[in-house]
Length: 325
Ligand SMILES: Nc1nc2c(ncn2[C@@H]2O[C@H](COP(=O)(O)OP(=O)(O)O)[C@@H](O)[C@H]2O)c(=O)[nH]1
Ligand SMILES: [Mg+2]
Figure (cartoon, rainbow, N blue to C red):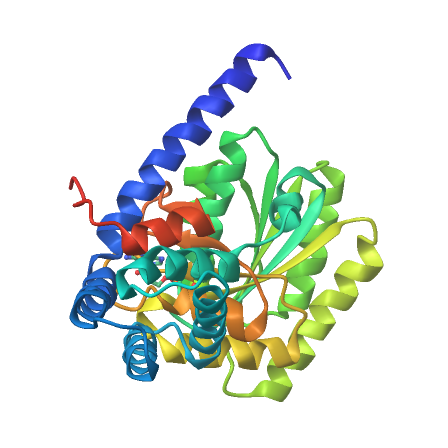
């Protein structure tokens, strides 16, 4: 890669980072207002650290959609730190709490390995969560890094789904492999794998139909698609991402659990983080399932997909700085 291209990438990454923080700060306004005002009331309202103090904190964290599991872990960790460091002032707990949430959210270095390997990415999730949109955004992101991308329109349930993906493919300048409405999604995946191999594509992204109401069907369909990829493309690096709509809060957590039962999920994409009051769900999902949140959607355009950065996320959740927009 030339120096120029490298510089361009670095610039893009750091610009992306600033944008990420700004959008998060504005997107998380409602969540933050709920959590922070609740917390700051506690930090200023209590003169000592006692059971009641912890109980109030617990309530605020659960109300903020962080979930029971994450809240328990965070409070255990906080209590431990308070004990070990002989902390007496409630206000000193603020930073400890932030650190503890960051520790909860930290994901490994390997989370984005697929972006730089020859890989097949299955994208699953219920209807309307943003699968097709996210695939379009992800394709755009990969294309801007000069990756060759093929999209499989394996949601053959509705004709509109294929057309929608076609628009995204054109926008991102990726190749699309589709099938007739009602055709077998596995055969679309088969064709897409053949195309990806023939064109030496870097990444194959598979859009799927979002039917969770019949678990057995869904499981069979996913298995069939996975078998084809295993057989036809054994060397490909594999990724199965579940897309969840952050605005649905605890429902998103339930969906993640159900999909986790039928597929080997390697990551989560949380969409609609712009303007949701339930951003805390990112913490809950990661704590309860141990599956990393890899990207978040913060709007409807091709630029509106960001890598999930736990540090930035927690900072945005607790910042007192006002969004510029
Ligand atoms: N505000 C916002 N809307 C989104 C986001 N991601 C998807 N959407 C919208 O959600 C709706 C459903 O998206 P779609 O990709 O068709 O969902 P699918 O059924 O899972 O494929 C569309 O109107 C998208 O524009 C996001 O991050 N933010
Ligand atoms: Mg779709």
